[in-house]
Length: 109
Image (cartoon, rainbow, N blue to C red):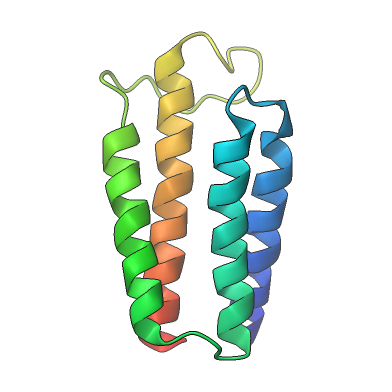
């Protein structure tokens, strides 16, 4: 489980770094940085499990609210950003990943 926490902590740091070119980068850097912080804090068991459940619920609510009105996929490559719906789907997917990881850490961390 420790390796999983380290893996996702580093992954969330990378996600935060990749948000630097986003127009609303401050929000997304904070979101992913807090998820990374949660992963690293759970390694040393510095937060109680309910904190991770609260984070998971917040990320899940954010993922639901961020879901695009019309799903067009999460394309990568040449057709990467042909509409706002693709960006919203990617953001929703990122929040969903954060929610699942925080729930797993809360349950088994």
